[in-house]
Image 1: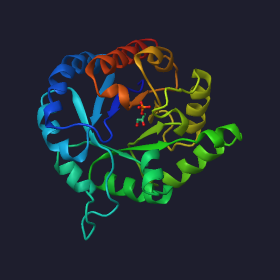
Image 2 (image 1 turned 90 degrees about the vertical axis):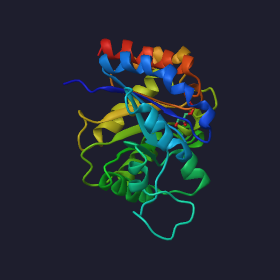
Image 3 (image 1 turned 45 degrees about the vertical axis):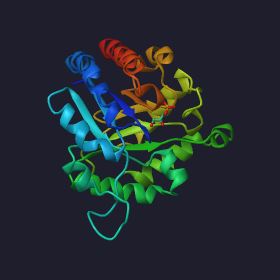
Length: 249
Ligand code: 13P
């Protein structure tokens, strides 16, 4: 059975209750997508998880968090556990995003602990990997991503999603070329316990203008979209590109 595709929006530190009308506008696009083999996911900030999950309960829109703590509860001021994220109505959680690795010093070992905790709470982890510009220019991209993967992947993950997000392509308007993306996704797949069944999605300045060629690549199972997920029109155009990509797989 072919893998379903996934278009995921990472809202990062954007979004308030006044933005929730987004979900009514997105719902018809998501309904079309799900019927065509493309899942649609939005990862709002933690403050919006519960209201977004309520709005999406009857829509074909999955909800995810952007992080969770490795422990299930305890004295961790300001943190949110995987069980809390699940309790708020989320089904997915982004882990190891390069902004968390950079801003909070998150290591792959920590990402693996968080992924184990997420799986135990019934969440599907979306584990992010990607090289910096310096690492790519030094010819180290495959080794860096391989090392991140082997240290971040939980041993017994039945279901997870991998997001390849080259750090230099995030929020810069630069995207990896289709052939670079295809090569890296194929490389990632060789290291997965379930290569054929695991979704590997691409992130880094995905926009309506480049989504068509990226979503048509065999090994690309969707996109993790930052800036272009904040408005319905560009996000819906990326969903449409994935529907077309899905049809030619
Ligand atoms: P942009 O699409 O804004 O480059 O962000 C990508 C990203 O980091 C998604 O997680």
